[in-house]
Amino acid sequence: MILGLDPLYVGDFMGDLLVTLLKVVVAFVFLLISVMLMVWFERKLISDMQNRIGPSIAGPWGILQTLADGIKLFFKEDLVPDNADRFAFKLAPYLSLVPAFLVFAVVPLGGDFNGDDGDGVVTMFGHDTFLQVADPPMGILFFLAMSSIAIYGVMLAGWGSGSKYPLLGSVRASAQMVSYEAALGLAIAAVVLQTGSLSTHDMVLDQAAPGFSLGAFGIPNWNIIVTGFVPFVVFLIAGTAELNRPPFDLVEAEQELVGGFHTEYSSIRFALFFLAEFMNTITMSAVIVTLFLGGPAGPALFLPEGWWIGTVWFFLKLFIFLFMFVWFRATLPRFRYDQLMDLGWKLLIPLSLAWFIMLAGLRVGDSENWSTTKTYAFVLGFMAFCGLMATLLTAAINTARSERIKAMEDANG
Amino acid sequence: MSDYLRSYLTVGIFGLVGVALVGVFLGLGRILRPDHPNLAKNEAYESGVEPTGDMWSQANIRYYVFALLFVMFDVEAVFIFPWAARLEAYEVFGLIEMAIFIFILLLGLIYAWRKGVLKWV
Image 1 (cartoon, chains in turn orange, purple):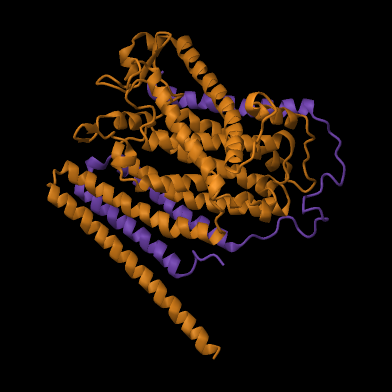
Image 2 (cartoon, chains in turn green, brown):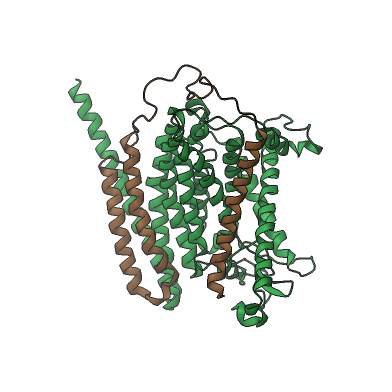
């Protein structure tokens, strides 16, 4: 499509390469700096919520504290336990950090999506391009694939350490992450249904389109509203679990497992896991914004029109989720492991599956031109059916349980 | 170079830079840090007491069952994503087919539930 717009583009290999390299470098610098600020932001915000001061010495308001910690970690001795599987032990930080970087490649960071011709194309040194590192056709599947690879990092770190706490932590982590990945994928499927494309750029374009208007107010066409909140909530919960952030941080529950999978890591290797964790928080927030909140799409309001409006909107939305993740950590107590598994398998997966089928029905009804009555009848009928099924299942479980308890009481007199 | 290939190539370059960056971090650390290993330092950490027994202890079989269940839902996703992206092409027929497919999978989940696999002791 873009190739058609600019005939010079095909032949100009060097310019092509330069734009790509520029985007890659900018993305990396952005990620590293934002991780540095995110660590500081989390510590500062948490200490505000806990009525303490937090980092305050290094730089203004302690903003350079992360840098100081990072430099310190470079000078620390690196220990590899004698029991460790040395290859797996050294491979694990790569598998943790590189996927965390890579997810960011498919996130649209800006561009002008307003008006009829707003297709997010930005001109950079005479080249038309999107403000995202790459827009592969399978975009959002790439995100799922990378979060699966990150599980290997955690698993190998725990197994390769040759120590008990890391092993327990990593086994827990992988079971938790695969459980929630199913719900994560189903929530994404609901968005794909709405967009009809797997590309992240198409998703933003779809959400930038004018939505339903309610009198004077135009409701944005964002997927959080269009898909009916449930996929968004499921994605947010599953995403938090995928990140191993509180309240789902059983992986590194200090009281039980010391440091979890990275107990045996020290020096810069430990810093790399830490970096990956915060980078994942940032990319997960960016993916939530892209999938459900329209990414860089947003009205210009009173600002002058330009490509950078998208970027401003993107960062505003990103910031809300970063704040939310810190807020979760300060507010919510940790789940118990059985509660965690129950929530994932018995609530999130059936709920997102049922919601997915309902959305698919609505979409098909849309293209078949069902009447309003028929659509409402379908939605109500489907919800009644699911509610009935859930009630029957709960009743069956409760009956079985009370019978078991009764049998046990009879046996014990 | 086609648009299609270029986007994958960019992702490839991005990945390579990522690997290189991790390599540079580790290399820099190797130059800067001291290195005085001894027996006590390189022992596995067990809250300060001397480690006992085999370090690769057996893990609960339940984790394995969850991994199997996950494979089921992951394969499901393989079918769901292409269908979701081309929903209009199959209309009502596709919807009913997919509903039956998902219902069978849900039955599988309920079966596992009934068998007590999902219960964490």
